[in-house]
Length: 588
Ligand code: SF4
Image (cartoon, rainbow, N blue to C red; front, side, top):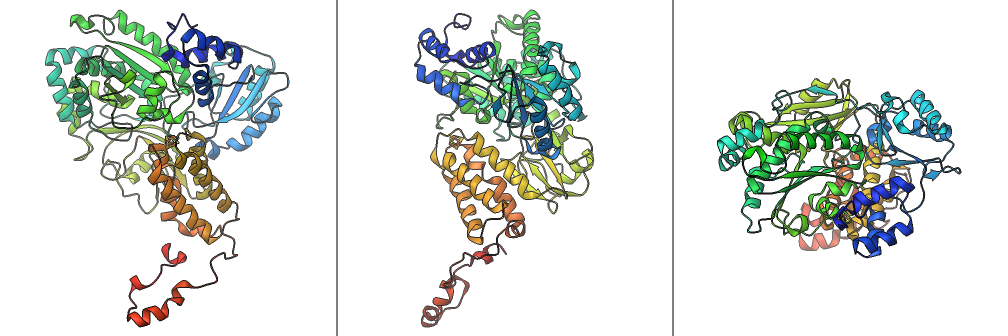
């Protein structure tokens, strides 16, 4: 294995994946041997193996089954199904069966919220789980049937494209974007991307042309193109569809980017949950090499560029660009200090652009159709269209391409959602909006989103949703900085106390203070947004939190404000500033 991967430690994740496929865990002896062969400390390998949730240092079952713990799976009956699966497989959740045949556990969102309850078996996606499918899965496992002989319908993943627009309705043909780029000229193509107003589609919204220009102007000439296909935000699954049905165009966008910034190597960082796409993508890359669209002297233009696919291993934090780069280098996915930004110091310390799958897809289309074609749609600061992943309580979950600036209500009408209680925009790290805000617009000016759009109707319990999201962040914190590592865990405990009916008014105040502390002092976006589910719902529905509190009051018996009455009289003041805000008043 070490030889296959050129004894290069940047390939550590791929090597560990192969070791685990052989032994169903990563044995001590393998770590010691690899340390020697890759010339890196044993502790470094151990740390990496411990960091990623899909790696294990103790034996797992020959069949390793995970069920998604995403809120949408819960809404589709995940809790009962998990209990049923556990019973049918005769293994407890989090355990390995005594005969070593099967292990069962929860995992974070698998990117299949439109066709859940979903799960994974030995890394491959299982969709639309119900009791009948679980019976079949249990039987296949007990018969020790190889996965290659399992019925195909168990692994069927549908695109569920419900509405196409500018991008999805007019996919370009292989080579079309590159041909247009070379004909028009590389500088002029960058100018068209600039004119289009394209901003990063992962959610942050940095101007794409600006990022590419900064990178191309770096003095260091060894540069890299990275496609972030690690969409781990619960409720997001659009990149899955783009890579299943529009991957040629994504690769084309990456190649155009490489021509613009002068990169020879690109990486597509594919989330581990999308293992089912891996072989297909490899085959597509090979086809492009054969067609002269990748490799040496692309389309006879003297440009060399190739793309490698790197699989993640179950770490949400690797969706953060600097953590993703660390992971590409074979390390734990811990976000770097910034600056320097990846455009000047990214992969192996070299200038690197990291963009979302949808961004490359759009860039390729803009290269063909021009900037004005794209900029004609959308709003002033949010040009073009946005591809949404819609799930939850609606008749038609799936993929929708909509113009930026569309109202939430218009999106709800498209997907057939009635009796709406609220919508989680942009996943748990985004914002929960109430049914009083459906006039708001999807755009960087109002509700920015990477694409996740989860709908909740009036039958849903708000605090169960918030609890699921808060537990998700506590689980996914990389543990690097204290405010997030300790804070998300405390947040989880404090929220559970309230949700379980053991909280007092003071607990809600403490919860809010903790939220602000984590938001302010965490090192990266995960910690800075981990409290959003609580903060955005506490702001909108304080009465739901209050209704959960014990009636015992732990507020001080001493009324400080009343005690200050003498001071107010002596100072001849009775304005609002001379009074202390009371806990209850802050939420009225
Ligand atoms: Fe890691 Fe959380 Fe700190 Fe980010 S904020 S570096 S995820 S511990």
